[in-house]
Length: 531
Image (spheres, rainbow, N blue to C red):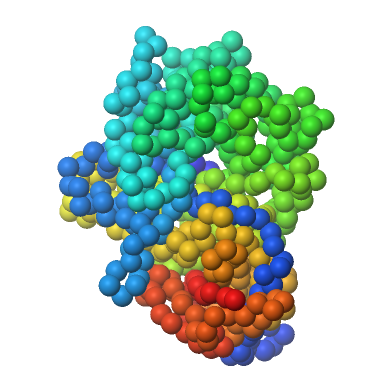
C-alpha cells in the first residue's frame, strides 16, 4: 500500500508478441471459442479504496467536481452515444482510521494525507461526524448502486497500541498487546454497529492489513505487523462479538502483502495463511468462527513480472486454496503500479498512458483467470501524487502536482488505469460466472500474458455473455467468435464492443461476431446475448 515497496527485474512483456515461430500471427484471423459449460468461480465484485485523498476531496466545496470523481468510479450511466461515464465499481473500501490525524505532527507521519481520523475519542466515546470526507464518498458509492461496502483498518486506534502511534515498532511484533484484543474488537464492533444503522452499512470488515511488513515510522503511513496467531486470536474475539451485538458485517481476513504469503511458509509465523486459517487441523483455524467469510485476501504487488512469475505464483495460490478448502474464495484486495516493473514501467513518475492500463488489465486477467479470484480491488481510488497507483487523479486548481495545494479544490482527470479496469468492472457484474474461453487453442497463460489474454463471463439467467480481451500486440488484428459449447448460440450476428486504447476510453461500437476488430495495444470488452 506504500508508493515505495520494492522492485523487480527482467523484460516484460515480450518485445514483439506478434511473431511466433517466424509467423506474423497478428495478420491471421483468429477464432475465439467459449464453453459455457466450463464453469469456474462466481464473481463477487470489483472495488477500490478511499485512501488517502477522500478525507480532503469529500469536503471540497465544488460539488460538481466531487460528483465527477464519484461518477468516474461508481457510475453505470452512459452518455448520448452509449459510452460509459464511469467504471461501475461494485465494492468500495472505507479506511477506518486509527487517530494519527488528530495527533498531527506528533503522529510521526509527515504526510498529512496519510494520517487518518479515528471515530473513537481518547475518553472512549465516539464521534461519528469524523471522517466526513470519506463518508461523503461512502454515500456517493451507495447512491450510485455500489453493491458492497468494506471497512478496512491498517492499525488499531492509537489509544490502544503499544507505542501510542498508528504504526508499529518496525519489527514483526503486532502493535497491539493480546490484553487489548478485546478493546480493539469492541472498537470495530461499534464502528460496524454504527454504520449498520445508516444508509451505508458495512458488508465486510478487514481488521489487519499487510501484516507481513514491519511497519514503522519510516513507512510514513498507518500500519502494523501481525502474526497469523495474533490475527486468529483477534478474529476469534471479533466474530462472536459482532454476532452478540446483532451486527451483520462479515469478517474478511488476509490482506497479505503479496500473493505468495498465502501458500509459502515464513520463519516468523506470517506466511502459509491459507493452511493456517482454513485448514481444520491448524490451531489458528478460523473456519468455524462466527461471521468469518469463507474468503482469504491478498495483494498483487511484486509478483507481476516476468510473465512466468505472474502465472506460477497465482497457480500455486489457487492450488493451495483448493487443497485446504475446496470452497474457499480468493480475493485480490489491493493493487497499484508500484516501484520498478521489470525495467518496463515504474510507479514514479505519474503515468496514465495505455501502457500502464494494459499492465493493470493483464494483472486483473491473471488474478481472475489463473488464481481464480472472485473479487479484484484497487488501492488508491483518488490520487494527488506524482505516482502511477491511482484511478482518478487530482491536481491543484492551476494544474500542478502538489498534494498540499489540492486539499480544498483541484482539477480532476481520469487515467487508462481507470478505464482498463472498467473493461472488467463495468461489465462483469456480481453473480456472473467465469467460463472457459480460448483463442486459437492457445492454452499457455505465460505466452498469453505477453500476447492476447481472453476471459469470459456469463449471466446464465439473463443469458448474457461478456468477454474481456487484453491485446498486447503492437498491430491490430481480427478475430471471430466461434461456438459457445453445446447447443447455445448467439442471439443475432452482431456483438457490442467497448474499447480502451491510447485514443479510446470504453468507446462503444457494434461489430460482426465473425469479424471482431482488436485495436493495437487495447482492451476490448464484448457483450452479447445467447439462446
